[in-house]
Amino acid sequence: MAKFESSIKTISSSQERVYEKLSDLNNLEAVKDRLPQDKVKDISFDTDTLSFNVAPVGQLTLKIIEREPCKCIKFESVNSPLPFNLWIQLVPVTDQECKIRLTINVEINPFMKAMVQKPLQDGLEKMVEMLSMVQY
Image (cartoon, rainbow, N blue to C red; front, side, top):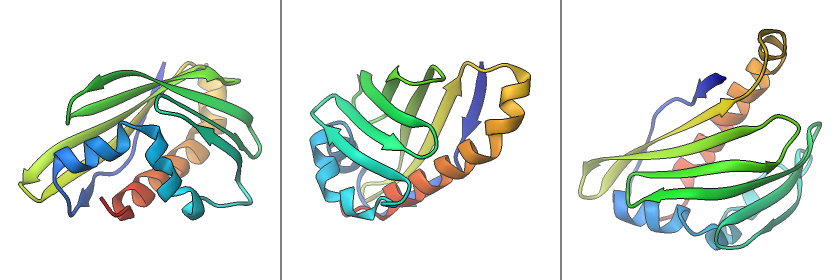
């Protein structure tokens, strides 16, 4: 299992507000337009599931498997060439500010890790940057 972590970003909103928005995937409608259309296509979602087609990987489906109120949202891949899980971690700074970090754990061998490390890390950084810019 290989672990990849994003940098930590600060969000100018309370931990509770950020958690409420991110723990219901129906709220992705607000950020759908910010996704790179050349890389991410065919996005569909409901409260617990997110499906999309990402170049060059193909169709991916993520499902929320655990919610730890205001602290963590855990996802697991349902349909992916490489099994992985994704965690969104939230930590309060003040009543009106929190920090966010994304972590991916993926089941890959050392050879594959060398091939996917840079794209995965870049993808995590883009995701955390996008989530830090959302209006909560």
